[in-house]
Amino acid sequence: MTISNYNFAGKKAIVRVDFNVPLDENGHITDDTRIRGALPTLKHILDNGGALIIMSHMGKPKGKPAAKYSLSQIVDAVSAALGREVKFAQDCAKAKAQADALQAGEVLMLENLRFYGEEEGKPVGIEKEDPAYEEAKKAMKASQKEFAKTLASYADCYVNDAFGTAHRKHASTAVIADYFDADNKMLGFLMEKECEAVDNILKNIRRPFTAIMGGSKVSTKIGIIENLMDKVDNLILCGGMTYTFAKARGGEVGKSICEEDKLDMAMDIMAKAKAKGVNLVLATDAIVADNFANDANTQVCDVMAIPQGWEGVDAGPESRKAFAAAIQGAKTILWNGPAGVFEFDNFAAGSKAIAEAIAAATQEGAYSLIGGGDSVACINKFGFADQVSYISTGGGALLEAIEGKVLPGVAAIKGE
Ligand code: AMP
Image 1 (cartoon, rainbow, N blue to C red):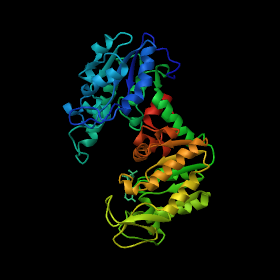
Image 2 (cartoon, rainbow, N blue to C red):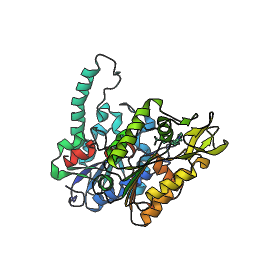
Image 3 (cartoon, rainbow, N blue to C red):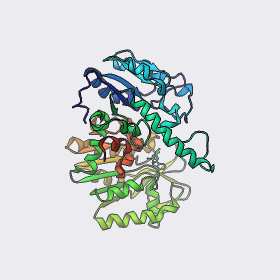
Image 4 (cartoon, rainbow, N blue to C red):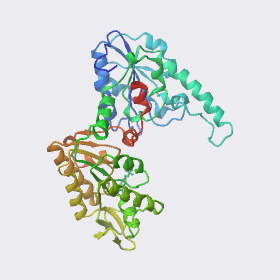
């Protein structure tokens, strides 16, 4: 079933959203992007004559109630965003009566799902090393099903719009779907958009396809790099991993971030790129600093010859040109991870050059997807957010999807 085709009139919909929003010390929301992201789905259900039961997690309460993770703190904000009263169920597993009483157009929000260990399905209060852990895990899996069944009993249909947790097989993100037939479960609009974005770079690729992978370490990106290797025409590897590649090729990298135990991995990536005809673009020069601080002394250096006591903190001018050239003319673009320590303004030029090139290529008709934490912060910092095709809301979930992994939250609904 799709959300656009479903008739919500007279129905109760239980909707998993990702309202894990950052709060300040007074419990005020500091960034409401995630609430805004779910609004199209929530409003559609209400406008269509349905009643809403909203459920989410917040933070990591580890299976126990904790005031600082209570979703009661955001009831007013959700109410303001929806323009109507939002009732609150203080115990997500004991909300049946409140759910039953809901009328069309009414909204009930459940307390933090992770106040129950059953949500994540992990045993609470017992360490992995404990010999009794496996037994406890089995028991928890059984009670996770019961928990999911209870949540399912509140509603006629289930909608998953929480892309941020789609890579988790939790009670509310996946297990619950077993209690609805195919005609009564569906992805929300945000999830649909995210899945479409992933399809655009993994399946419906328009060529040439340029992927830009940055960030600090090659080891955390290897799964994605390997999956992309079969799909891209140009692969830009930048950021901290530059220096692992330089070292692998026999370079001197000073005190740059470098994964000494991943030199073989770097060589292997270079060999694979060659074998598959992928144009691998590595930085040739770097901005190096004598200190990890914005006001450090800097110089431009060959990535293969960084002096002792200096570290690479950004892509140099030659590299920026090479990156821009590989982005220009691309018809599909994926960017994950900054080209330097962009949090410091003086080391942000490489990341900015990439953002500019992506914006220009998008203007020329390319499809550009930005995702995975820091590159989203980058694109926002440089003011290009409205000049790219899509900015993913899911960090870990997007990365797993790009690695080619099946997301349990999507599979539970689409049956893939
Ligand atoms: P990741 O979480 O792996 O995507 O890495 C993002 C982080 O990598 C950002 O906080 C950047 O500051 C950092 N980063 C990028 N380039 C470098 C570099 N040359 N040296 C140290 N950290 C870097």
